[in-house]
Image (tube, rainbow, N blue to C red; front, top):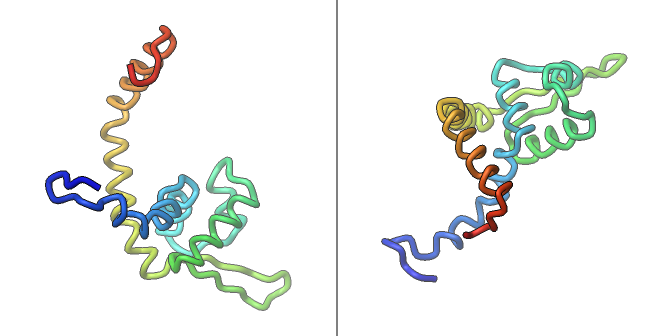
Length: 131
């Protein structure tokens, strides 16, 4: 790999964190983390508050976040069983960068929308990628 101003091996050094960024960067994980940032929630409460997420996708998202140490799952021996989800300290530490990314996206949404419209107009006019 070539050295681009001291960045030799950047792709290689990024590989170990790719799976983490994939987890914390998907839309459902971001929504769950932000929602749990407001306090402990139960599964159905989260599903209701996060519009459009299926039961299966919420289950997979919560399991992934739990596996990565970002969320805790607490089962209470009641009838019916009660299960609470909460952020761990590690999960709470993710709120700051996610909030910063959200603020950036919100602040640049008009420019991004304009870029998308311009790109789509070029694509609709028959331009080929890379030209």
